[in-house]
Each structure stands twice: as C-alpha cells, then as structure tokens.
Image (cartoon, rainbow, N blue to C red; front, side, top):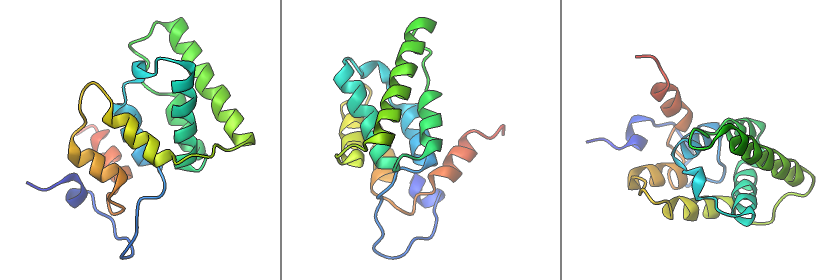
Length: 143
C-alpha cells in the first residue's frame, strides 16, 4: 500500500527539509488537532505562536485558524476562543515568537488523546515532497 507521501508527491531538491507549514499542511493539522486540548491561556498562546512561527505568519494559515472546527463549543465559547486566536496572531505580527514552531506543533499532535497516524505525522513534518495542498484539494473534492 502506498503512503500519502507517495500518492501526493511533488518534486523537491535533494536534501530539502520541511521548514514551513504551508496552507495545505496547516489545513490538515487544524482539521486533525483537537482544540479542546488547549486547556489554558498558556496553551492557546503557545499553539498560536507555534502556528505563526511555523507558517512565517502566513495569512492563509491565520484564516484557517480562525475558521478551525469549533463544533464542540457553544457559540459564545467558540467566539471567545476565535477572538483569542485573532488577538494572539496580531500580537505575533508585531513581535514574532522566538520558538521552534514546527517542533512544538509536532509535540502537541503527539500528545493528542486520539493518536494520529504515523504516516500523517511523517508527511506533515518530515517529508518535503508531500504535496499537502493536493491532498487537501483531493480530500475536499465532491467525488
């Protein structure tokens, strides 16, 4: 059976590494991450800072974050969490975080109560040839 990286493959120069969370990788990450695991303000700050750092402040990633799945919260709580995300992102635009965002995001996904498939973790964080945007487009296609 082929891995996601083999099916959704893009050419990259030899020796490339994953050094940026692009729109596709962020879309997958946010779709799998269980936001209710952010139990404190410090957790929220660390999460948003890691996303900001890992994406280099990409506005597409910010849009995905603000549109993250909030179904498990009532409207008032979802609005409050969305406002925190927006406030912290704006803060990091003024003063970028000094952390290793990709490492933190990887650690956070490994602590999720439902384990993520190892192939997805590898594709997101270790395989620069994984075409995450093609994967998302395929996953979201009507067929």
